Amino acid sequence: MKLTLRIWRQAGPEDAGRFDDHEVPDAEPEMSVLELLDTLNGRLVDEGREPVAFDSDCREGICGACGVTVDGRPHGPAENTPSCHQRLDRYSDGDTLRIEPLRAAVFPVIRDLVVDRSALDGIAEAGAHVSIPAGTAPDADAMLQGHDDAETALDFAACIGCGACVAACPNGSANLFLGAKLGHLALMPVSGLERGSRAREMVREADTEFGPCSLYGECSRVCPAGIPLRAVAVVNRERLRSVFRRG
Ligand code: SF4
Ligand code: FES
Image (cartoon, rainbow, N blue to C red; front, side):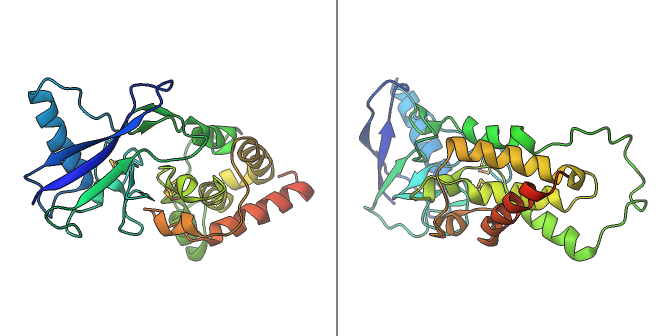
């Protein structure tokens, strides 16, 4: 099928940017959005033109590198699906896809579809680590953990740090991401020992760079890891708890 790609082109952070139209006459329904961009780039390179810059790594929904906005929705029209898994089977011959970077004030465009998401890394760097002497790794059965806690921690640990939740939020809030990190680490036996200080540092960092949460819920609908909206409640719980508890 023939598709028209209306793609954001921006030479660098200082460039104003614009949409350019490109036709891909040989798109297949089973292709992903990234494979469509690969096909277009092959043609642009053959013609001696500049290919479209975009990020990707695993193409398996694991690394979080590939987020772009497709038809106004972070990652694309399919809910809870990363850009690398967004298939073209919902499009028909002659359709137009509008592809642009993740849009958020904290994610400046570096080039074309590539944005700088280091503000999100800043939240993780503020506290998503263990800084106390934890010794060597204990035997797996020496530190027992309840099954429900382990399952909940694993659910929150599924966050791949893609930033789509921030781009989907009208306030540019990172609370879904923050709640996933806090909820995961608070339930682990060793990292739980720094629960209070971690919450204080990470919440402070998020408050500096990102907007507040108004519970719109768009974040959870685009999240490719399926992080539930209750992660936002985790932020509020950990924020309050850290006021009264040191550890
Ligand atoms: S919470 Fe979901 S949308 Fe937000 S960064 Fe993590 S995986 Fe991406
Ligand atoms: S390329 Fe890794 S999640 Fe899409």
